[in-house]
Image 1: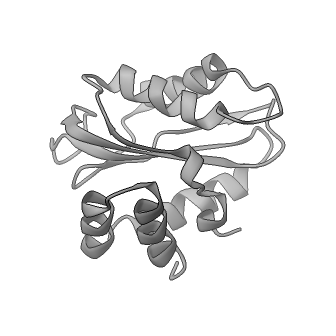
Image 2 (image 1 turned 135 degrees about the vertical axis):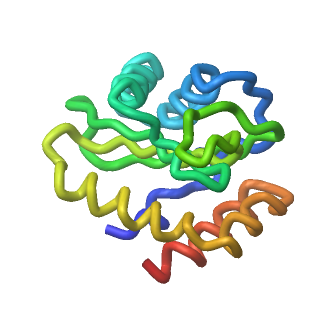
Length: 154
């Protein structure tokens, strides 16, 4: 599965006012459950991502993080995107604040799909042109377009 297929404008948040890693994860959790008919609670999404963060930061560097987790309540993978106006400390290896977050939740039993989607996201987000496109996008459709271009090459 290509992660670009999972990115929708409804699950993209722009210029959110988040002052901490916790608030960014809460905002992503809200985006992940918004409009879903499956009844997934934002608290479950937040807990899954927070539990993973306790194992080690998902900050990749260059202002990017990919918080992720697995949930038994999910039938299919889900992605949300958050672009912050001010980066937050995500304990990334390069110590740069994170302003681009791509959250990934997958069904609990989807171990190989989880790793494959993470790898594709990491490759797509390692391209400076992609990051510049996400940062300069005027709206969620522009962010989606920048990600789709990058992820189509993964």
